[in-house]
Length: 349
Image 1 (spheres, rainbow, N blue to C red):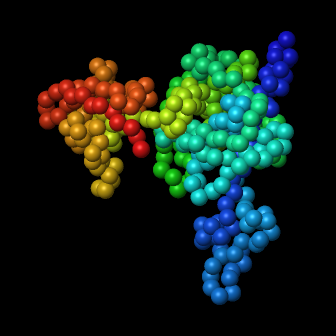
Image 2: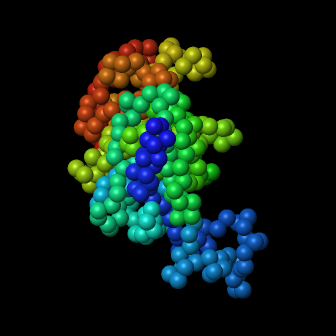
Image 3: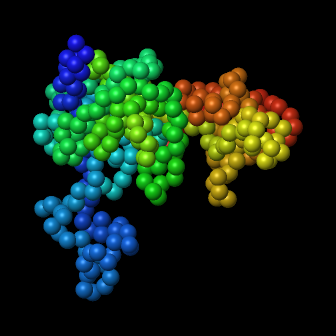
């Protein structure tokens, strides 16, 4: 019975799983080529400019430089994938469907907080994946990850269980990118690799509960997916506003704990301390809601809407549940005294 359920689910989901192909113009790629590769490629006779052999390009001068997976969530061509798969604004993207069709892809949005992106292709009547509810998943529940990387490793499937909930990791899109904290992730031992990163993580009922996003290199059976609820909110924003709307507070902060209290001789061991990241990046962004509310560097925000802030409950978690225009109420510690203030959240641009 279980075997039939698994094969039935794969049969339902796989037709809606797609490949996302990344291409760049040959000349643009030559300009970006790392210097350490210069010795392996021919050079222009008039100077040191690197020349990539044209055999790597198609008849339009485009070179395939990478890709990932995605999945169709609307029969009219709306596709979900990872933001890091389509992060290069200078690249062009196309989608290969499971039946071999190829379509130019338009990037509708890249979520500024989650590793989620929404694409659109010019097609109708497509197979699609039903969306589930990640808040109802339980430890030990069987899940399936599917992928279709670059049209080469078609029908990639892996299976496992939910092995953790609400996980937090720090990840990087590439070696040059700044680290990004990702919170609230689903942990699974279903293998996530180049064949299914960006594809759906589905329940046995065939409903997407997550977007496959990351693995821990050097560890066995530790993979992560973004809860589908974050992407569902993005989809609703796209339908209503034509873009993703996220609330902006406008501060940089570090969470206070016992170690930071001792190191900086603070009076409290919890809260979010406003602090600049570099000499050129102020702790409070000019013109932001935080500045308008009078927040300053070295302030420690103790409570967000009357709920205590600590390392397990940072500001980012509370903002995830807020909307543009909502009012956030803070209890702030400054110079030995506490006071309350309110901030009306604006839209993150």
